[in-house]
Amino acid sequence: MNRKLFYSQMSGEGTLDYELYLNTKTLLGCQSKFEDLCNADELQFQIVHQVEELWMKLIAYTLLDIDDYLQQENTNRVLTLFRRVHTAQRLMIDQIALLEIMSPKEYQAIRERLGNGSGQESPASASS
Image (cartoon, rainbow, N blue to C red; front, side, top):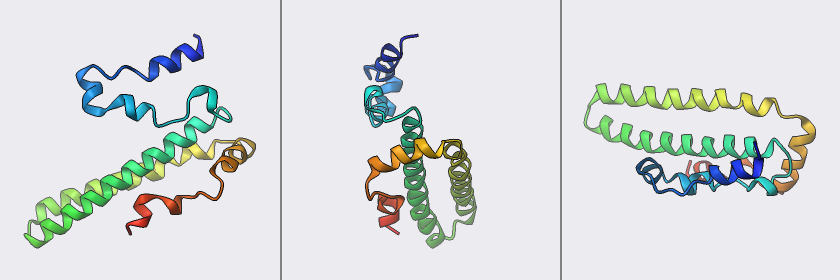
């Protein structure tokens, strides 16, 4: 299959109900274009880190809900929400394995593009 054709199809039109609800056109456009990737691992690097940001957003919102339910003494809901947080954290840890299979050479090329950037600049880490 032609890679350029495949990547253009992955951007989607965003007209189906599912695409509209999940805003897939924007979501799939958050990564660098195929021709702009510095190497084959950069897409993987971007997706893993973007998904980490989304998990952290869910965790932060869930912790706010937990606080509300604690005030209401609704312990059943608190326990359920803590399970959500735990599961999201486990998924975050598990997906790091994708980064461990990157070669040091590929990572260095990506790292150069990050400049001084690091996970410490995450909106989630700024709010903690």
